Length: 267
Image (tube, rainbow, N blue to C red; front, side, top):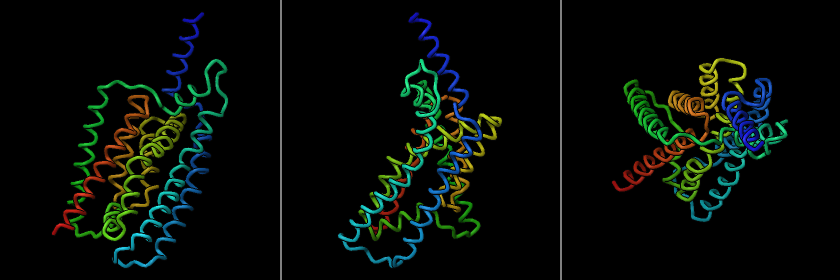
């Protein structure tokens, strides 16, 4: 009886690795319910920021601290929106009675073990993304295209509001990778696979991921990142490798921003 019960659990895990328990229609509805308020909040936040003075004069410590607290609260809240729909569909929808809610939900979103050798693939993809990014920046310079990326915006923030700058980097490294991977790869990608071939599910989820960053200048690089994250989700059946790559990429970007910032300040 115990062996039969374990076999049932293995079967459920294997099924969830191939197909999400939510339908394509539910996936689309979930994207609308998530991305519409997410976009509205980001637009409101952008308008609020654009209404502030654009001077490059450093902020006073008190003003900077207040901005940092507001940034932490607002950005953290916006990122948490990515978790609501996935948690609802993974943990509170119909599930087999023999599988505990927690196990069913975590398995559905892709929180599964993966082979240690996958780390080599993660590192290889990180190097590939970095090369693509460098080549893209060289292309922009060669074409004399003055496009301002989000990284440049964050860099300029570091020169006038250091506390807000470090809070922004903290959220980028420790909050965004988990929240975004749960939504885009745990929920969206696996749901899209219910109604289309894996190639189109990877590409469409990557396009949606890139568009939500409000960074047209970095769209190509973000698209490549989205493809890499979805590929890892598909090949491993786990969300952890994508979170790992996402974290490494954002950490590398943070290090490069810090090197750029303090390199310029030392001149």
